[in-house]
Amino acid sequence: MRYYPVSLDIMGKACLVVGGGAVGTRKVETLVRCGAHVTVVSKAFTDELKAMAQDAPITLEERAYDASDMDGKFLVIVATDDQAFNTRVSRDAEATCKLCNVADYPSACNFILPSIVQRGDMTLSISTSGKSPAFAKWMRRRLETEFGDEYGEFLELMGLVRKKLLAEAHEPEAHKPLFEALIAGGLLEMVKAGDKKGADAFLTEVLGEGYTCDTLGFSL
Ligand SMILES: C[C@@]1(CC(=O)O)C2=NC(=C\c3[nH]c(c(CCC(=O)O)c3CC(=O)O)Cc3[nH]c(c(CC(=O)O)c3CCC(=O)O)/C=C3\N/C(=C\2)[C@@H](CCC(=O)O)[C@]3(C)CC(=O)O)/[C@H]1CCC(=O)O
Ligand SMILES: NC(=O)c1ccc[n+]([C@@H]2O[C@H](COP(=O)([O-])OP(=O)(O)OC[C@H]3O[C@@H](n4cnc5c(N)ncnc54)[C@H](O)[C@@H]3O)[C@@H](O)[C@H]2O)c1
Image (tube, rainbow, N blue to C red):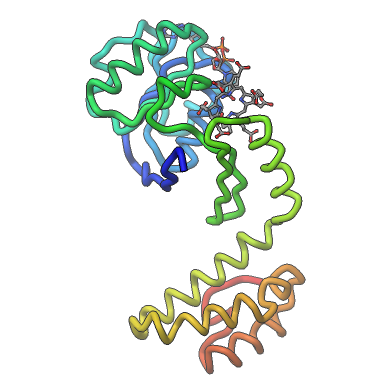
């Protein structure tokens, strides 16, 4: 395996994006969705980025990049259209041990970005280890048709069940078959169909009294 997959917690973390064009805008959008506080340094910004900065934790700095922009940043994404400059920024990032991605330039990255399917808290990431981004995109589109919004809703319900079970006892071995029964027993289909009565009966059957959509705080 060429790259090590991780899920980074960037909630509330200071991130730097250099280059506020079309690609930079896309990167900022994802960072902000994950709760990051983003500083964008660029000679110019897209209108979309300016609009996003109105009500999101985004600071736009219309000026030349300076190596001190690395200070205090957890992660850096470089997305200008000047490859020599991008490489220089990535060297500054490396010198200060930052996580750094340069769009379309894997040899200057210490992480590369996957294609993503998001369904609530369920994330499917597709990486081809840089071999074929076009194929990663094709795969994303295919998975998007296969995995609908019901997967995010089902995950929400599984999370609520798990939270309640964990509040009662930390017994992973006893919990495992319960989760497996819920997953294999058709609960996903009930959530997809909006079948609250069926879901309640099944939750009670597998988990016992006290487990219904309402008591779990799940709206179906
Ligand atoms: C997944 C996605 C995420 C994102 O960008 O957020 C992403 N590229 C996407 C699209 C895309 N990029 C390119 C095309 C044109 C078709 C093609 O070339 O295939 C298309 C498709 C299109 O636009 O239709 C051009 C391209 N990309 C790279 C190079 C340089 C090189 O290969 O050396 C070249 C220029 C090659 C040339 O010179 O021609 C490199 C990288 N691109 C990566 C990620 C990383 C590896 C991901 C992986 O493991 O597969 C990596 C290594 C570094 C990085 O950028 O992180 C996003 C899909 C979003 C979606 O789901 O829609
Ligand atoms: N991974 C992908 O999906 C993907 C797709 C298309 C392009 N790209 C890559 O991303 C790069 C950027 O693409 P784009 O469409 O956003 O380009 P763009 O021209 O729309 O934006 C580039 C931005 O960088 C700024 N900039 C240029 N030099 C700068 C400097 N020295 N200091 C600060 N800011 C500077 C510009 O003002 C502009 O805002 C391309 O060169 C390409 O290699 C990646």
